[in-house]
Amino acid sequence: MAAVSHLKVPNTLPSSNRRTLGLPPSLRQRPSVVSTAGHATPNRRTDVNGVPASSSSREDLRIGDGPPIRVAFQGSHGAYSEFAAKTAIPDCTTVPCRSFSDAIAAVGRGGADRAVLPVESTMEGTALRNYDLILCHDLQICQEISLFVHYCLLAMPGVRTAELRRVISHPMALAHCGRALAQLGLRREPVEDTAGAVQMLLSRRLVDTAAIASPRAAAIYGLDVLADGLQDASWNVTRFLLLSKPNPAGESPAVPSAKLKTSMVVAHRGGSMMILLKVLSAFSSRNLNLTKLEVNNPSLEGEGPVLVLDLRGMGFLRSFPHVIYVDFEGSTQDPKVQEAMEEIARFSVFVRILGCYAADPDVYDLHH
Ligand SMILES: O=C(O)C(=O)C[C@]1(C(=O)O)C=C[C@@H](O)C=C1
Image (cartoon, rainbow, N blue to C red; front, side, top):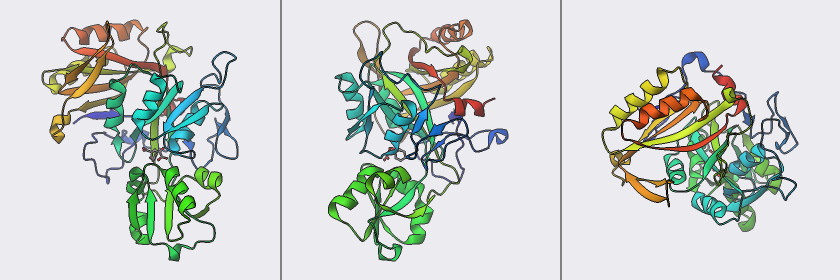
């Protein structure tokens, strides 16, 4: 067992270490998320590159009157993660990084103000590695962004599909397009990110190779789009989290509390099922709505413990055999939430709040 998520997961897909359940049938409808194809949903305006022109629920564009907010992301310009950053903060400056760890480290050393990380996809479930990365750092989640991920087959100008032998992209993109790629009979080779694949085509002038990337990357680098909508599932949504250094005042964002969401991690050294039940009971008895509940038990995969930075006192890393990720609607200022947290704390568990942030309004709409 163990995950309840707000995102639909097609049941035909592999789920090695992903343990996400889908939406109840009543909610199985396409969410009105921003599409990376550049088609805006009715409540979001986008420019020609699919970048939102403005959005009332997004972060303020500047820190005071200062320079634009710098957002670190894994990949090259044109990656989906960069689009997520631009969706959250349209006027931000983006900082490309080699890895997710580098993006997080950039915030730690002041090279960026935020980092953006993909954490969940409707096709693959939770990216536990990225969640676990958050636990090791003194960063907080300040926003969530859900994007409809739309994949295209891109090639050098003038190249025809029949001339292709190979396709390169981020491993997730190759996995998401498995059926279409099998039909095309192309050899698949993973690279670090989708836009990086596009850059490789250009820099090496590869005419027997295609890249899977976004329509936005095609526009940025001037490549031809040979096929569109390559993803196996009819809809493919990735949830990204925006991370920042902790707000010193510990304040919740200024939006009505009904639209706030909190993420936390619960860890202890005993059996995970017992604690899972306690968490469920503490929230359900107070009518608090969970939007995610997921156990990460790496020992089941033959891996080591989960490291969690304990922010109390000087801050030190603690190791746990398993942790439970919990997202719920509401804020830590809410008395009912405080009661639930107190109840959970009575079972000598370690709890860390990962962030209290405005729920993505489109995903939020799915619940109501
Ligand atoms: O390679 C990119 O463009 C990314 O932003 C990374 C990433 C991922 O890691 O899941 C993001 C969304 C898509 O599902 C494919 C790749």
